Length: 260
Ligand SMILES: Nc1nc2c(ncn2[C@@H]2O[C@H](COP(=O)(O)OP(=O)(O)OP(=O)(O)O)[C@@H](O)[C@H]2O)c(=O)[nH]1
Ligand SMILES: [Mg+2]
Image 1 (cartoon, protein in one colour):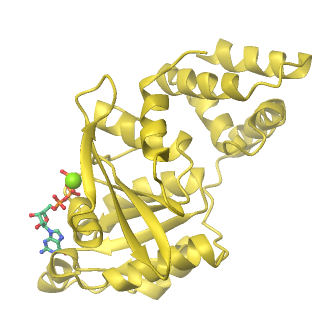
Image 2: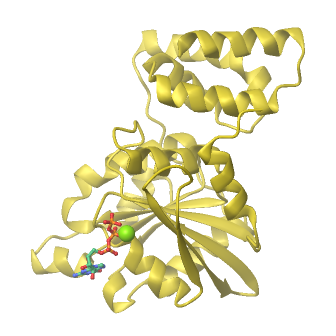
């Protein structure tokens, strides 16, 4: 079995992980670390992603008798990773199976920031949108209809001013509901054109046998169609670890490998 930096990282996160692991993702400079520091206080430590210069922080807080581990990820514009930072964020969200992912977005440039949120929602329904910097949006006289945004996206939307600790209790409550009260989320799904949708369906059938709910098979199919070799390599490594070893799985694994 190949030991990647990813696996070593996941093992570190697993240690004393408490009752749930929550990923904090978002574009650069949206206030992720401010949210992280406010929620975890001194209960945190930082480290390097094994083999990379990328820094991550892990911390914890307690809410309603549950111990929550937060992972502060480096800023990313996209999960179709272009930089080492983006690769780390992507790999954790995709393969780390956090119990929920909070996407921190900048209220003053929602349009650009929602790209990442939609990509996260394509991987996992367990997504919460934290719309931060609403003080800046107000200053710029921007009005945001948060409940309409939540309806449109199908996930909880929490407005915050992280620097002033405004809205962070709501964020903790939302995380609690999603993780422990099994609040049903129905994230808006991006529908592609007919040709792509039918290709997705075919590939999804092939890979389902390997994926077994450990990854989202629709997302895997999309990545195989994209053909990005770095992500396909990680998908291959992940699926190889899950491989039950029968003929059907071997064939599916070969399909994934050949796409890379
Ligand atoms: N006005 C305002 N500033 C904020 C708010 N939240 C964070 N900031 C400021 O925004 C800047 C960036 O915050 P960080 O928490 O470092 O952002 P980040 O997303 O962790 O940044 P990267 O890790 O570099 O991607 C800091 O100067 C914060 O003090 C907010 O709600 N309102
Ligand atoms: Mg940060």
